[in-house]
Image 1 (cartoon, rainbow, N blue to C red):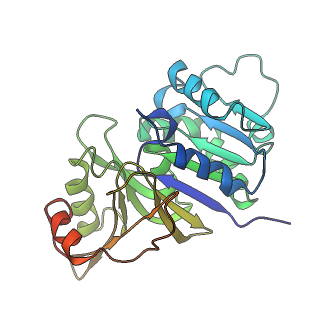
Image 2 (image 1 turned 180 degrees about the horizontal axis):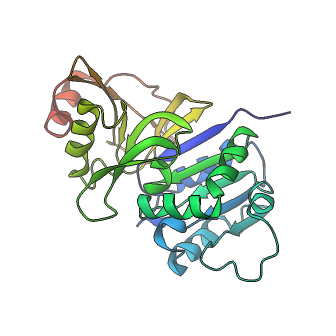
Length: 259
């Protein structure tokens, strides 16, 4: 039976971070619906670095029926098509790095088209940082230094900015881009936070780290409207997507502003 298209977009963290977020790594596997899923890692955004690849194998190598790395920089002699490789997996996980480079390289290889087919066929798409923003209509990248808006694949309507707590300089750029209409309304996510979409609908906001946050931002009549979301702390029971309590809300105003 065909599965509902699913995306897990992580604001940062996961197996490539220090000390890591094993609860998010576990969620990636759970979303596949398989006991021993086949997972494909795309480290394109960072130029296929050996360190990221080693962390991937250490995290998933013994947990999965197949843990494969697709290196677009090292495909010499591989007779398989990208479509053949991607569609042989249950999960495709995109790593972090440069969103702008990722988008350009995927388009040059036609991988963007293959990934849409994979998603529509029910293969889970996951990713962090650049590998999370790429699934949306746009995000905020630091590919060239200062943060700036960048177009994504548009599988999910709306925009996403990542590292809202770890790299707070991204957030003002995101807010202004949404206010001006340069980016559509969307989400800002702290490190360790994941947004789960079934089809194009947000169904869960989760976190592997206590005290983290996500916020929905929209422009209405030229003004920003913010809705804070309390993540479900993985391993601690569901908290749902409720607004923050007033005392916590007040502590967070300095970061996200009023609204």
